[in-house]
Image 1 (cartoon, rainbow, N blue to C red):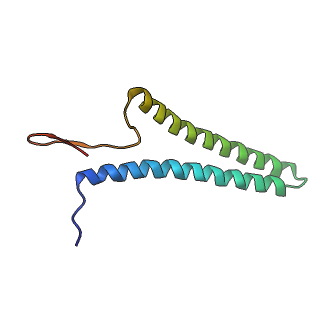
Image 2 (spheres, one colour):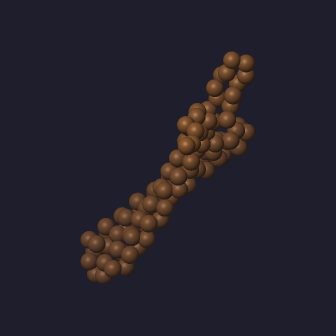
Image 3 (cartoon, helix red, strand yellow):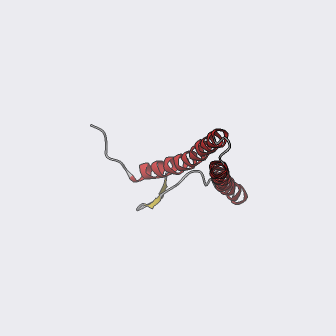
Length: 101
């Protein structure tokens, strides 16, 4: 039997969740970019299909730029403030000390 989850484990879960969310957003943007490129190539002479494919590519690139910008802004703020914003910390004020995991 394993021990129950404690408060410090919540900080690890939150950190992994944030990293996974940014990674999934980036992967989704890349998949949509590939799908838009495939739609554009297979559009042939259909102008409406080509326009829809171009819009898919545009929105995929915008999503990728937003995802990378969010990651870059977090890292720059952390660099200027000298704080690690990639790690989520929960501090609990104990009876004699401040427990920060």
